[in-house]
Length: 400
Image (cartoon, rainbow, N blue to C red; front, top):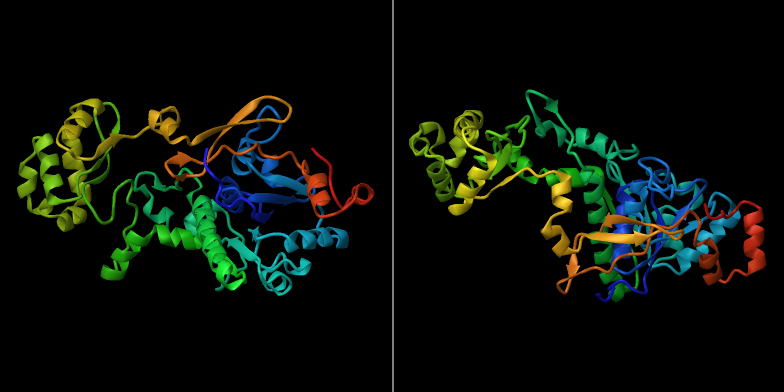
């Protein structure tokens, strides 16, 4: 068990879907008290996706562990009054609404900062806060296409494909966390908060740094790279007699030569098409055909053992069950088990970091809709009669 570094700090969480919810989940994992604001039926992911036994979706559960749920309609004056009380006692405010959506409620950065200058405000959008596309909404799939990420993923046979996981959602969420924590450190000196904004589009561009470097240097557009690199070769996926491996045999010329020795293809070293990394990249498709002609003669296990014996990085492409059941995942403590309030358990992946060699403490279960409404309002000084009146008038909600 480790000390939670953000213990004592409160996050007012007005996020939905993946990117914002992931950011605030990481803050909760680091010890912050995250109060998730939900209206109506709550976060759409409570009902969109595969359901767990307790009628919450697996996706919602994975993104909202360790939070508290406050069901309040902030469109009403009384609801905004509650939000205002929370802002006054919060350290962070995080949202991932379409730009401009919160202006009418006085919850945009300029309005919040004017009333609460010490709060650190985090905003995640699709395309960023400025530019001709700033007001557009955006989902991970859309931004994978818009950013160019899909243009280098896939091959000529199948065409462009999306990355199988929502990498832009998770990446923009983590980018937001980095900015929030940096702004918090500054606030400890200055006493003032600031706006931290990021977007799926900006993280996608950051992930394309190596590809962009080639474009800036050479003006070349790489096109579909499959599982191969625009910068190194051989560096990608190759077929064996019974499956697939990935081979990183291009970290140095020595690695390339050792890979050729394992394959008993020393003649490739002298081949003008493959004489150095630059020419191998140019002739990547021809190189792949040459390597696979040999790799297809033996099994994956055989080749992996041979590459391992001489220190050439290679591995099989593992399925999700192989990974999540592995000793490495277990050693890292990444899988956490949580208990439903009505009995039963479910598992999620924890935050991707450790402190002092130890995994972060397991978080509490994801909250039922509105489960913490009364407790949070009581902390703000509202008495039972006021809480009951707000509920009777539909300003606040009940537990689901």
